[in-house]
Image (cartoon, rainbow, N blue to C red):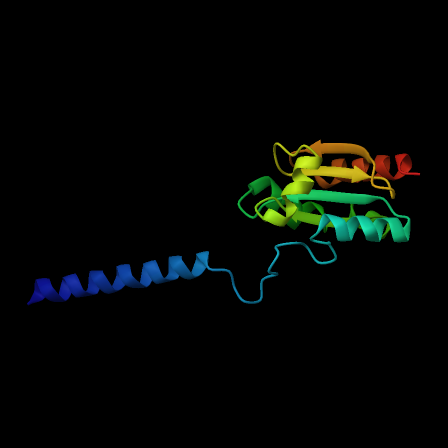
Length: 151
């Protein structure tokens, strides 16, 4: 009887642990459905139209939820104090490479690795590109350079 009780307790512990693990893998209902940071467009065509109408350069971020450097950029670089002064000077787009709707844009901009960030002038011409993660100060320098080259 003692062995059955021990097995039941062990089974219960494993069942609870698996339930906790499973709930950690399920997105919460409050998470942003596209995975895009707040204020980012999620479609290339929409972002390009907005950039043209506002006369602002465009930052296209090709990313994915499973990409650690992409998530580091999303969580630490884009919202950083170094990048904050550039937020209103660009139109921002966060394009998930796993979304079939973003495949044409990924092909157009030659995305081979992510994060792949393309900087476009307000007319949609690419003026710079970078691939891989970077610290906020380096990204802010890229933004400053793209802004200077965009007009």
